Image 1 (cartoon, rainbow, N blue to C red):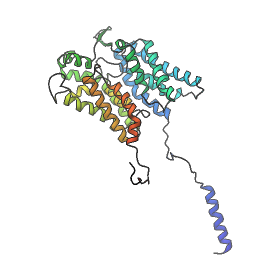
Image 2 (image 1 turned 180 degrees about the horizontal axis):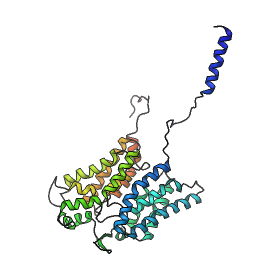
Image 3 (image 1 turned 180 degrees about the vertical axis):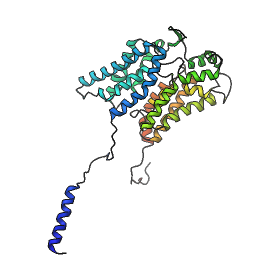
Image 4 (image 1 turned 90 degrees about the horizontal axis):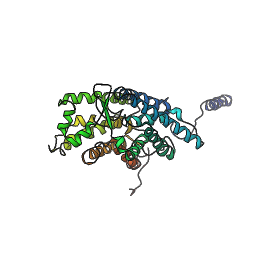
Length: 350
């Protein structure tokens, strides 16, 4: 090649290199169009049908508590971030989710001012005091609920159901009736017809927290999140299946009917298991990072829920099971930490 041609080729290569510069930076290198606000508002949309059913079934006091919990959560987040001279992030929807989940996990008869205290515990004590979104160790909504439970146990265990008129009557939840009255008393709540019991629990015509009663609407909301890719289906399936299988095996022992005599279908639909499995145990912040870790997390949640329902003084255990497993999340992440690509374990290393 002549010196002139060689010079032209080198000049062309240098020009190409200027057009295609390589940028060296830390990960992530692959990005998508998903943002935190988009994810959060999609979760809100997934919760709205079940929340709307709670308002329809329990009445206006349920709507008041939802509004109060959501608005107070947003206000607390705004005030805290302003006082701490931090960027205000109320538009991302995370505070709305916290307030909405808190209201949905509480009785519809709860005094409105307790909803404000619950939001304070969730947003200020749990979320913001740990550094804000992405830094909280525990699920904020369940921290708010747990705080209300230990402070006002009577108000947090007073339930209502519609009795066919515009009036509401105080009544126990199906789990409470089963724990203290047995299976016969449970069936009596639904006219001694097991199919009626399953149908009403699936649709949502039963006592309980205002947003946990409608199994079908919560499942549809959870399936929407799975479809969007925000939730790994293995997590809710593992938690729900764990409760169902264990309750089938040992759920009949406290009632004197022996092993393999429990009612798994009832226990999978009862209490806050469905909302907890789809919307709490799958929290991107407080659950483990890896899929293997998330499955271990869900197994633990299911096991602790069963233990509390069977031997605890409280008929429901979803809230406390998730909070206890939240505390173990860092340990789970450490135990199932994936190996760095290309790395070789040192000889003799543990």
